[in-house]
Amino acid sequence: MKYLESETFIGDAECSDDAVKPTQQLEQRLKKLLGEVSTLPSDASIEQRLKPLLESGYIMLDLDRLEEAWEITRPTLDQAISAGLWLQAVEACDILYQTGRDDALRALAHGIWLGVTFPIEPGLSVAMLQHLVDETPDNSDGAAVAAATAGYIADMRTEGPDREELKFFTNQLMGQVARRHSQVEEQEIFDFWVERMELDDPSKFLPRLAQVLDIINEDGWWFDRDELRDQIPADQ
Image (cartoon, rainbow, N blue to C red):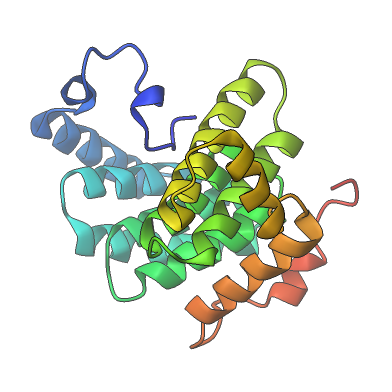
């Protein structure tokens, strides 16, 4: 749940300010991580190399060193995809999106595609979809489709306490989108809105999400999706 942007998931902090790490502490942690990267043995796995790099990218975001965050993270996306490390690939896309650079939305679209296509940490997949909701106008159907997909992932990919927590979050997200989109406030009207928008049928809203991602990536995708689809686990 660490990826989600909501006061619900801050944890035991008394206020959001308590969750902000001091700059000096972040700088020290970043220096340590970059030192680890430079001293990794030649036989270190790609996963071992990506872990400190991605954490460094997130810290650079916190330090508002956005250009550096992009530069250190962009190569990790290709490396993660080549190694079939889908969680790390989506984390890379998350960092790239949060830099706010010209290609940030394209990075978000890539991360959403990967996070929906592959069975990674569902909290991260939902967080990427939440970013899309935040990026879309109030009257956009794209936000509704993203919220519906988030609910679908929470329902299909989580169990136990995490399932209830993520389901609550995605239900709240859907309610927020319904209010933005059509001023929906009552449960009966909400149910009608979901049915009218076909947000209760994955065979309808998932292809619409794909169309939204294609529009965002009109200049082309950074990877071959057909090639990656061949790597989808057989039991998914």
